[in-house]
Image (cartoon, rainbow, N blue to C red; front, side, top):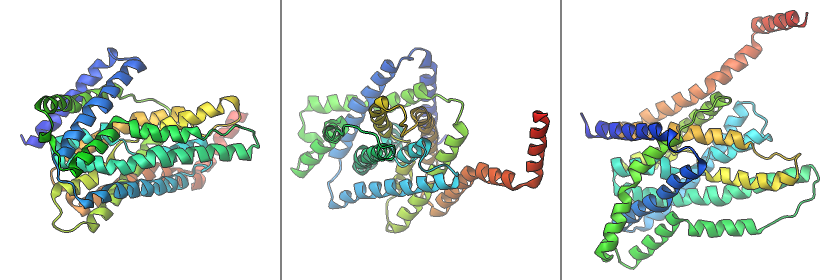
Length: 378
């Protein structure tokens, strides 16, 4: 059995343990505790170690710019999906889609697999790239969500008190986030010529032991968090397939722009990172907007329950996909394969829409529907 396949089975077992622990961890507070340990301790420690083991290069500054470009392209892709799905672009559901689809949460859905399959240098590069994604989800999407809210207020000619302190608070929270603090400290250390061995041994060991927690905790958390809810599952799966297929095609463009001698792990990183799950931060922005709407019952900028369903399905969807890519060796470094998979996913997402169009245009089906309606009326 190959090493990649063995790792895959190990990950599946850990996810299975998480599923078995669902009955033990049920409250939101307990879930938040597990997630806080991952995002505030295990993941920052892993990124810190990875960053201090690489050589800082000016070319790394391109990674956040590239990630931000992918976010923007997915934003445009979400608009296209809304148009093809014939959703009202000014509806709460469409705005919810546009905020979530272009966002990434690589910490829970991507980084553990990058560490295990591609190595620590890849993780360091992914962490740099995530800075661009953070700018998009924390700042740009917040500004967009507030713009939509004030736009609705203006349409309905309502009077509200504008509070600009929220953006300032958001900027401070961005700086206080442990992952960003670790990035800043590690980059400063590298700039002054320090590395991991420059730290006292007890600090090296402490950080190393915290880092070891990340992969098992993330996989167990995924097993605990998986919740399939009925209702809009079909539409959400269509959107996720569209998002994934669109992201694959973006990865093809990136790979075409890379030099021929680019290492395999960088090519795979360009494919894996855009397949990360949707971020929780846009949901936090939606919650902030909903708080502003409490005194205005007529306003509804977003659908929060629908957003939770998207997040609930996005995490296992992306996890399975990233795990499959990592387990397939160099298969997904081939642009022909990536293009084929991307177009296949987009086609799958469009099948229900094509069936809907066919049904609406089929005279026989319309006649049967009219006849059924007439019988029910009589």
